[in-house]
Length: 185
Image (tube, rainbow, N blue to C red; front, top):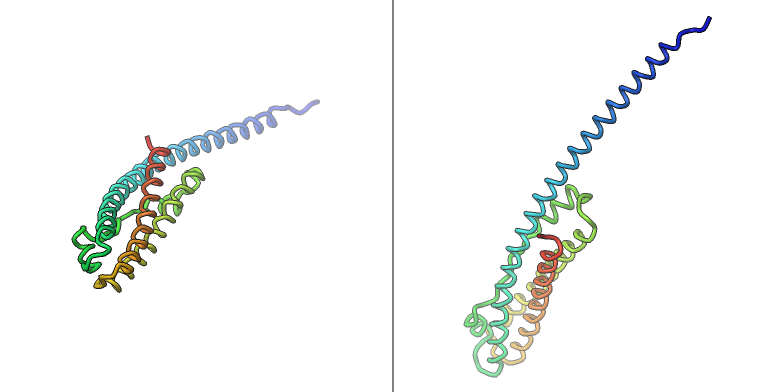
């Protein structure tokens, strides 16, 4: 007499039900995580875009002021005004206020959600910001040391430092524009 196959069948049936249940639960969990990641990415991109727009406006404003200062110093190289007088009459030197909070947040929390090129572009912006800060430090250090000088050599040296700063400001403006055109709607 043969033993009934029913217990084996029920055992396999129970295992199949458990496996299907686990697969459904994992699929639902993956879908929910995907939706949460997408919402997180969109919110973070809104923050990054907002920061870049604000920073772009500030860098543009500062760059325009620096153009005026450079033109003023250039046209007053030979007169007897001090460097400080010329710079103040032209509106002074200003430091652009730039923000990189969104980039740091992306990288420290969910960098895997962001494509490599976007992270690379944001890192390039941050590096240009650091270079701009260094150049501005050199400019200000020189300006404070030589602000009461009237000689053309000091004014020319100031212009070199200022043109260096302006070069980085222009690079930053281009990088911000490129990021906005490549990654935002």
